[in-house]
Amino acid sequence: MTKKFSVTIAGGGSTFTPGIILMLMENTNRFPVGEIKLYDNNMERQQILGEACKIMMQERHPAIKFSYTTDPKEAFSDIDFVMAHIRVGLYEMREKDEKIPLKYGVVGQETCGPGGIAYGMRSIGGVLEILDYMEKYSPNAWMLNYSNPAAIVAEATRRLRPTSKIINICDMPVAIEGIFADILGYKSRKDFIVRYYGLNHFGWWTSITDKAGNDLLPKLKEHVNQFGYASNTEDFQHKAPSWIETFKKAKDIYALDPTTLPNTYLKYYYYPDYVVEHSDIHHTRANEVIEGREKEVFGMAKKIIAANTAKDASFHTGAHATFIVDLACAIAFNTKERMLLIVENNGIIENFSKDAMVEVPCLVGNNGPEPLSIGTIPTFQKGLMEQQVAVEKLTVDAWIEGSYQKLWQALTLSKTVPSASVAKQILDDLIVANKDFWPELQ
Ligand code: NAD
Ligand code: G6P
Ligand code: MN
Image 1 (tube, helix red, strand yellow):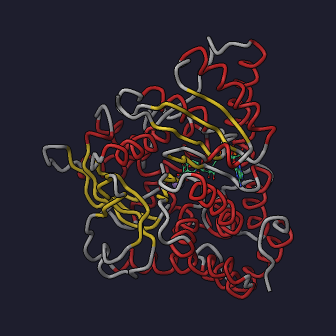
Image 2 (cartoon, helix red, strand yellow):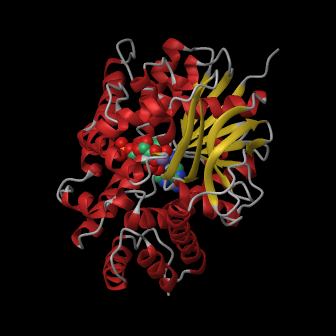
């Protein structure tokens, strides 16, 4: 009999949970699942999504064992994979991450600049907690981790849990590759072979070919030069006005280095003044998500519970859910699929720190990711990456040591922050806002 895998979704009350469950169900022919458990530390959120998914699973996949819990032992015992996407502090704290920097005229973003640093200081403890539960109750399991800010979380787990089976991942490159497929008229991003390097939310494509090796960059560049990444993509998450704006802005990001194609997150580092000018301190992306995705997902769940059927129910799936299921599949069946993952550099980028966490193509099998060599990178990218990786490392230092000084240095070094004095003002506000989440800083 083929093995059936047991998967725990940590952050089971996340807006992305139903989409991942649906994707797992769509793929049982290549990744057989025997059991799905949801785990969250917030019973209210867990119960709503848990009950709704239970009804859906009973109707559509009665043979698959399904449960939800806030008890770690129950959640993490006898499992093969943890798919994690927790948000320590919920959207309430995301809103503060975005709005506090804006008060000082600085980019307010959940993973970039001071907001990302603040979120990192909250996430490290939460992610380590999940990883430790997994290792205690299912020592052979793998943790596939979406929890943001992935760059800071990855540096923290590299340093504090160096031998753990955790892979930190991001869906932005695959979402953008979906747009590339749209632009070029291909069915799927899986028709491409790409080369890409950088840090998380901070990288560049250097090559995109089809399976026969034909260079697709020239045609893509022509489009990007005119329209950025604007396309007719159907991805629901990225349909929101702020995302559409971000995709258009790729045109100006691309202009800095027309030999590569950029990750959209570089806009916060190249054009912080533009971003601040186009932000509304009273209504940031957190508000957009609360009024949009959260309302939609929880509204749908409540409807399922009230009707006691998921007959008419639909949840969105997409590149985000596909990517994590592909990764589990590659590990489970040693497929050696080529995927962009966040791994320790160790010479992959020759002229960059060995101990930096970088995002690069890897072949994935049952021993985890095997990164492909990148060689040397140009001065522009190297300079930007060195500054940003130092911000990420200083943030982790600050969390480990409880150091105010290191965190002030991290904020000051961020390309999004104009001076040490502005950094200090933002930091002092963030400390007050995060008093229930951060370690005490001396
Ligand atoms: P959400 O707030 O809807 O869900 C997060 C859930 O995590 C909440 O239900 C919360 O109660 C739970 N949680 C918080 N701390 C926990 C802990 N210590 N243990 C267990 N559960 C905990 O958020 P969302 O918008 O659905 O996003 C979820 C996470 O996924 C975020 O970190 C987000 O940034 C991340 N994400 C990452 C990527 C990526 O590219 N890496 C893509 C999409 C989402
Ligand atoms: C992309 C990024 C994620 C990030 C998400 C935010 O998918 O790769 O790291 O969490 O966008 O999306 P949101 O819709 O919550 O603003
Ligand atoms: Mn990401």
